[in-house]
Length: 284
Image 1 (spheres, helix red, strand yellow):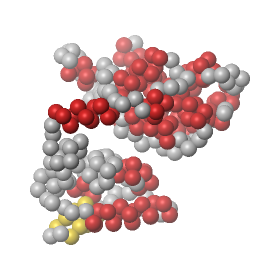
Image 2: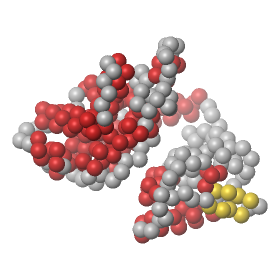
Image 3: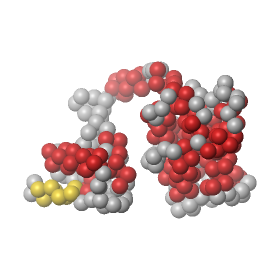
Image 4: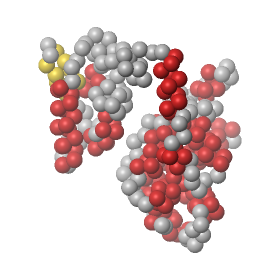
């Protein structure tokens, strides 16, 4: 629960709404310079008076940005600050208290095989790729940090690309600048808005929320799965074989892999390579 907000992430944690602010106000989130800022860095409370401290890449100017800003400010000013230390509240229980029974009920709800979850794993990609992505969503890939937790002795646990941050699945696929450049190229190629993801699940949401046709969603799913697959294999080649490639070279591998899977696993065999390279979501 909110205390002084010093340990709660303003955009990522769920504190003001029933969802993170990065999802509720996506246009403002794109303008934010420090996407990991705490609540106390953005909102200062003194004697019941609240001051908002923004750090934008540029000032909100578009109509949707200004509308989001007014709504966000209204919510913040209406929010009751209790002060003191931040604390955890178990959301699966109406009283906020942890219990084994509430965990059991939550797990049954989360693992219920609903229509959306079934559709998520359907697609024109091989089973080995689906398994890898599934393990990534569960944080079960053998990253350096996970191996270290299992008692494996390693020279270091730093990312093989940036060599400055501990290697976790979320860092490898979204946090590292190397991966971020790859996703930026994928966005440009697919003509998508910039991706802001904090873990693998966020990338999977992109395909689910894409406003195109059902088949276009399938194509986008191929591209996203291919990108995740290629990034993981690029990491392995860097560590185990010493292969060093630039993001632009990795991007070419993504195009080739996704095209190969699309051509061989869909019924659309007539799509040409040059058409795929130009704009893959237009092949439908």
